[in-house]
Amino acid sequence: MPAIVSLEDLKAAQKDLLEAKDLDELKAVFKKWRRIGWKNICKIWLEERTPEK
Image (cartoon, rainbow, N blue to C red; front, side, top):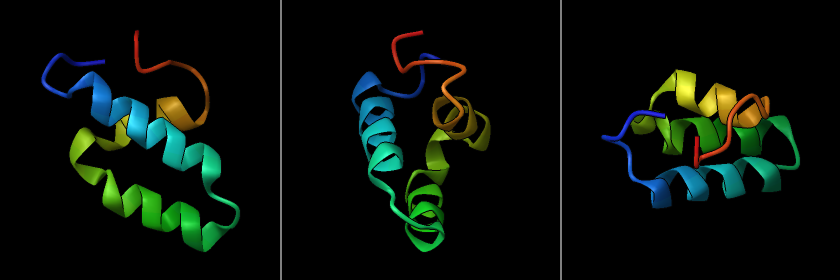
């Protein structure tokens, strides 16, 4: 993950993604964390990367 995004933000986004129970909640998470980048959000969501990587 790029260094310009804080580790705390990435961990918080991961927590929100894991807690989303339906599509509307998932859409809200994507909108909330849009500033960390779509690619980062998708990689965390698909568990291809962790915030520490």
